[in-house]
Length: 485
Image 1 (cartoon, one colour):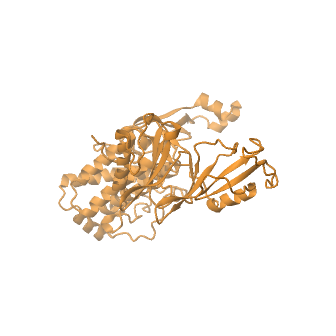
Image 2 (cartoon, helix red, strand yellow):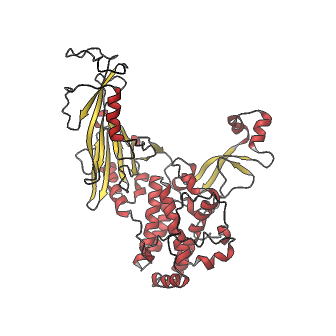
Image 3 (cartoon, helix red, strand yellow):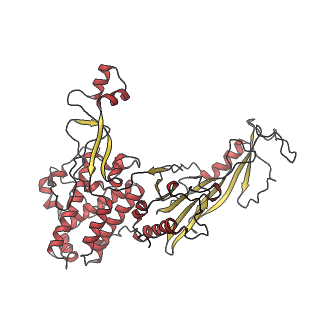
């Protein structure tokens, strides 16, 4: 699988910055972002942010809410009184203002800066708003107040690379409020909430923030925006009146996503799961123990080359924990996949860390060594996810005999040219799920091998966007579990 590694390890949250709009006169690969960031005392956000945008706004990322019946003004006022009961007025004002600012900033970035389209790419520099604190580079900018880029390139007969070297400058912005700060802020405000449903909605804000941060999955940022939107416009304020009067089109203000627990929706929850996964990582990091296994961290273990990720690799609808132990001798390297269920965590798969995962629940696990007759072909086993057991089960495997490596086996067997129908000098051994290590089966040619393989893959695509983090303290802390003493 493809590993994306992050070396910048402090964290930012894009939706609480003071906008992602373009800076006048600059363009190219990214737009500039104002450098003044959100804090509780700095909430001067214009109510007119809701102006209708072009038809190509990211409707693909924000799913239609047309089927949700939005609450009336009377229902909003009644629910507000019910859920805010017992909270001091100063805390109510603070909650309302912080949710308003966070919503408007994320909404502005969504409507005017294609936020969710950019976050669809896990390597987008815009994920630095979640990951990096301080100065970050969003791309390269150039000033086009005199001539556009294509005019300059044509007039000077230069390439894009030459143009970049001459006319662009680093697109640097500064961020000061990170995801951990946002989670802490919401947690602190939640402590004064008496209503269980409202507390659940604030908790889902924190959980969605944590999952977006940990996985770089746009869907979590998308859902985060929906919760902020509904909290702001259909609970803490009544957006249709409070904000609609300032807009040219009230369509966005009037949109209701129906994601709040206070109105009966099932809130997103991942706190117990992420903390359980965090405990596994802390135990490995601090004590050299790997939960659910008898595998310990070897003496040659190196944290700098060990990674973890949260990703729904088996397709069951929730993330698994992947831990890739490569900071060890070849014999000790291993990759684990943990699932999470009603009884806590459990190991779904343990294999040599050379896995290729597919979107139909199949995993190809290459062998650690290739010392046989396979040549350039690398032997592997295939595993398939079993939803009933929530574990991977071995389906079989494949090895090969390359004629260029040896025309005759040690036992005297001669390469079977009669089986090698495509005459490429390679035949294949199809290993059963209960393979005992013997090659007493008849090999097959390339066509039969490919048919066998496709019977498992069934046209599936590789999962090549898994976001791995270095196993370091600041990264383990993302999952919200406390570091043990």
